[in-house]
Image (cartoon, rainbow, N blue to C red; front, side):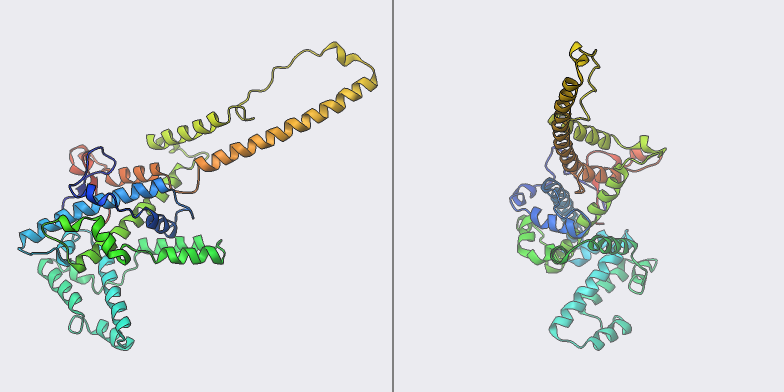
Length: 373
């Protein structure tokens, strides 16, 4: 599989079907997904639009490669096998997909009213009593598996560290929620692209494709789209964590230019908005005492009284300015994931480190590495 896809941050369009699906937007749904995956309660709209652009670009390129695989094997539609073939090299993500497919079949059987004991028995017995889709998946992986590693994933019960980390993060996130926030969080966790299958198909502009994906392939694509969003949020949270300055950190100078530019621009906007804030105003130059200060005690006490009133008004103004400055800082350095975090996460994910990295395809600027497979 080609490891690069056209970058959504570039000026050129990524695919022919991109302009058609552009009018359909999942930005509002993505904001709810981002909240359930660890972002702030009100994620930024511009960040959601950028994530939507990345996901759309990657799925369009993935569909094009899957169509090429289907054409090579003489198929009329894109099916599960074509997408599984493209994911064969990443064992962890393939295992995650197979587990998702198993639980989807498990859920459909429960909805149809099959006894739960029969479902567990089917899982223990193996492929003889497995569902038709599961049987087809196992046969296909067996046909391309030369080492036995792919079939071993059906028996592997290894803990998924990525999923475990996401669950722990969600648990920490819900500790400080009230009942209303928790209800909103639970609704956000249930969102998926598969629940809006018709809109999702139009978003990918599948009707214009010569070889179209079937229902099973669309279900996998919806899963991969959600996984891409989850991985972008995971990486962006790590980037945001690296952005926080740590006292005495010897590697603080190694922060990328993206952070430095964002940090300076955020501070600059704050300073321009409030140029007279106490933090930006230099201390006044001391002046010589005037002759009026050498009067009688009553005059001195009166002047002191007026001075204290002036100092109180000055303090009140300074408090207001500090509140405005703090509000500007909260907006600039919000807990929400910024677009620059997403761009830096994509840059880091596609960046190859090594003596031959400038000569690898993933290092070139004409594309980006696939996040879902």
